[in-house]
Image (tube, rainbow, N blue to C red; front, side):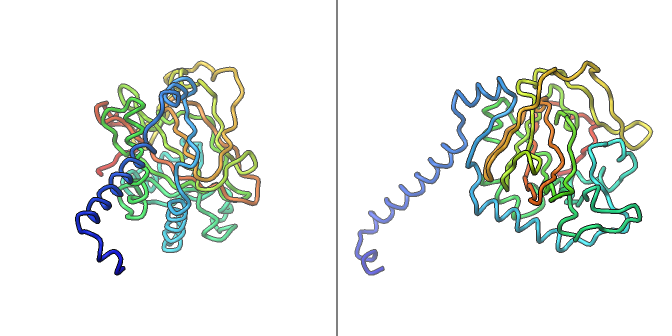
Amino acid sequence: MKFLLKLPKEFIRLTFKLYIIQLIFLFIVKNMLTAKQIENFEKNGYLVIEDYINKDQRDALMNRAKELIDDFEPPSSHSVFTTNEQERTSDEYFLSSGDQIRFFFEEKAIDKNGNFTVPKQQSINKIGHAQHALDPVYKQVIKELNFPVIGKQLGIKDPRQLQSMHIFKQPSIGGEVGLHQDSTFLYTTPMSCIGFWVALEDANIENGCLQAITGGHSTPLKKRFKLAADGGTEFEILDDSPWPDQSLDLLEVKAGTLIVLHGQLPHYSAANTSKRSRQAFSLHLVDQNCQYAEDNWLQSSI
């Protein structure tokens, strides 16, 4: 400390400025895609970036999720998450979650009598859908990750952070997520949805990693999940042709990896049959220059 006091003030100021410039440079470089990465995204419909989120950021999200669940008092009527969205036609808890932080249970976490089969911490399928706007810990980490910078490089002119989810894929009971396209649920004209999926833990075939049809984003959007005119929700079929006749590619990744998903990319995850969870955080962007459908299921005042 005495040594620092003897240094000229101008030298100290200059050193501090250079340090700040270095931090800004590292931040910009981290979020800048190479021409090859952009080419791969356009060709494959997804992009895998290793070591995008550091351990401190991962721990912050997982610890905050645990705190939220600890403070959560399950209602008498449990909202179960299942990819059969038609079961949600009268689930107001789900339908009004676009600008809230809500908790959704694994289907196998609750028996036919409504009783939990596992402890509360192991019963949650996901937390959603507005942590990005409402929770200070999530807001800070998302600010540091700065997904809109990547979104702009992939064609989104005016990014809007629309939907966030903390996904648990609980050990042994983590449910399957059927083959789907994200734009089905977050429809804009023209379509603009891009998903950012961050592995908070290692993801492999045993615990239900993502799987995708490489290049399948050229497939027409199959359907929309929207609000029905007579209340509730419904699927509107847009294209009834079959999915591309090719196998799904495994996206097995280490914790800290970011997977960027085109809104029309068909992707899937199997049930978690292992004894390990597969926590992930996802955020979806849409372009505010595009028209967000008034009858999309997710409506937010934020």
